[in-house]
Length: 327
Image (tube, rainbow, N blue to C red):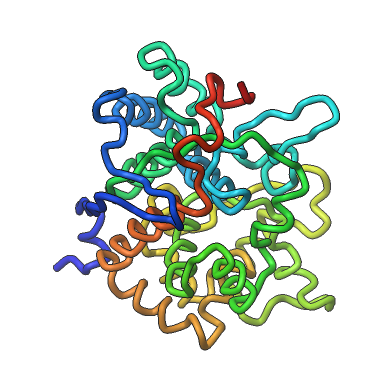
């Protein structure tokens, strides 16, 4: 008999949200129904093609949407290239060189500009691409309210003030997400995106070799798990800085195995394992590990809510002709 976790792989979750308000701004499902009817299908085609070649691109697009929304809101500021004397968010160490998927957005935007000039925003393309990656890698589908406009500013230093670093504990993560209007449960739920993608050894090597400024291993890490990581991440590994999957069980599938890993003390980053070590979040981890379908529904809803952070609508911002430069 299949457990709920294994049988979930074949389910499709539909979350229908006709309109979503963020302050005075309103996003709407089917926003391009009349102005560019093929908008969402064009984005999904570009995503499907890229993710079929490299599942890591899907992980990158989901992460890119998160990094965009947490800095200046969901305004595609993450997509802007630097200009002379003005380095953009792309140049921040949290984004460069680890973020990937920019070429997928460019491909979709180019086709959309040909069919529907200056109609579909880069911010909406990124929101669609994150949804389509989630569907491609996890069979989780949801309706994306659209109508975002593109921002005009991107500053290299702003991610430091907004993105949660990999060493945050549960209380710090809760505060960081709360500033963006997201609840404790939504923070833990969205952390499940770490069921795909990879991390550089440098982001967790302190847990293997120098926990709390000692020469010891993090006691919250499963010894066998740590032993395997040490084989791939030697101490003082140098400039190569290899990568390992964030989820060793199903590294290319978005699912709730991430939470099972945390229960087994096999969370890779401090900001992962802290969710099970903290009394404020441990029970949420247990529930998400136990019921993959319920977690998927929550994940879809949380992605929609995250996609409404500090949005620009109406006459605010612009619709860029190219996602890399302002008009």
